[in-house]
Length: 310
Image (cartoon, rainbow, N blue to C red; front, side, top):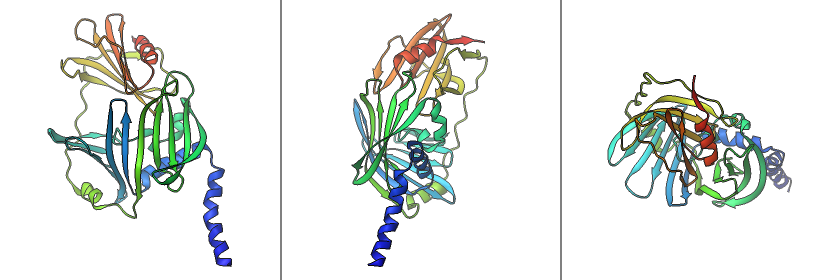
């Protein structure tokens, strides 16, 4: 009988500790789990116009993070990450590599990053508990501090802290995007597919475009927490016209800003919303500015209008 009571006590201790954890502590444990644990997720990415079944595998090989993402529907399309190199493998083009800490399109990169950096734009609030993928989960709401961005909520596995569900919500609390884990397998060691990926010789990282003779565009206004990540020259898909490109992020979402001299390059004129992705086109002086991102259209328009040369 004494052994039974001791076993029950050991099982109860982690639960008691979790009861006292803050929402931020839950997210910090999630960040650590996404970087260090060995696991395989079968998940579904839901948007208004399509459903994508995916498999995501993560582990450590010789103290280096390795991850593999496979799209299960349609033509073969995979991504492999070894350290900070992500290689995309598709059926209709040669494999190519970029420098990135995470594979885009699975979960927000910030989930495996510095959670404190998100506090400029968001607050964290604990919600209820529910069962997902056969596992008990804790809800954490990531609530925006203003109306310039969308809100998020994530359910975390109470055993491993790995995410089981992720929702993006608009200002009216309507669901824009969802990632739902249908099976989570915790592994004892990195599987063979990750070990093979670690040993493989992937293409070198593509060189960044040279930013030559570019104007020094600055923003008079950005939402709290948004910072400039990249400045370079891009070519628009279809027209192949060169434009100035500026990438912004608050950690949870990214905004792309394209700038061209008015009349020199055909830029989109329509404002549209699809799967939470908005587009705003503005004329600023003698330049045309297009901003694209998963934030309210009004935010994109205000960002575009605030652009100026210094």
